[in-house]
Image (tube, rainbow, N blue to C red):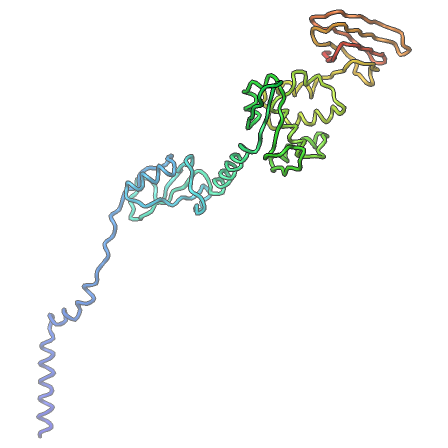
Length: 331
């Protein structure tokens, strides 16, 4: 009987507790999960139109709109991570596009240059800066004070272009020394070699070509040297780096003109057949055409010829020239 009473009392207690755990109690138990904070999202921002702007201009406009520094990508789609776009690099598109609303903090900008192209341009600029101080042209005229120039173009604009002599130092050394050439300089030497020039001393060859670019004598095209083929090869090297030289026409004359000097020639062997003319103003000039047996076909002694002297010679003849200077073939 006592055990039955105890069971009844226990049941009453359980029912009472269940009655107490109504909606309010259930709400209290559920509150920990319902009060967890939900992070507030950043308001969407309209992407400004930065297409055509430089990267720096685009960065400023995007910053004012509320975005962080944009992430640059090249025209190849590769992200830049080693260089900073320079002033001429422009934006060609953005992701998201201009006018779109986004919650992103950073905008992706596509540039009109790849990072590899940017790095190559920087290397080229550094190489050009090194070249500014690599060459030293020293020019003087008679007993005057020598002047120093950093490029052959500076010599063109100087009083020494019209007269005087110039020498060159490469990286502080004379070209006769074994100066280590840069790839661009060796390329010029290779041009000379490809035309049959003497490149046994590469630095000397390059120095000679640079001096040709700086200036040449007025009678350069009429100067005869032991190896005219070497001189023409050097001229080819000069034209490869300074085709805009004020004396470029002289270079072309060296390459194309047929010239002979005073002396005894065999037409068709040591002299091409054709019509030749001297420089204007020759004095005391004697010339003669002879047969193969030595008889005179025609000759003349010219005391003074303001317009120059003209003679036509034919294959098999002999030709004699004394004090007439250089003859240039004109036909």
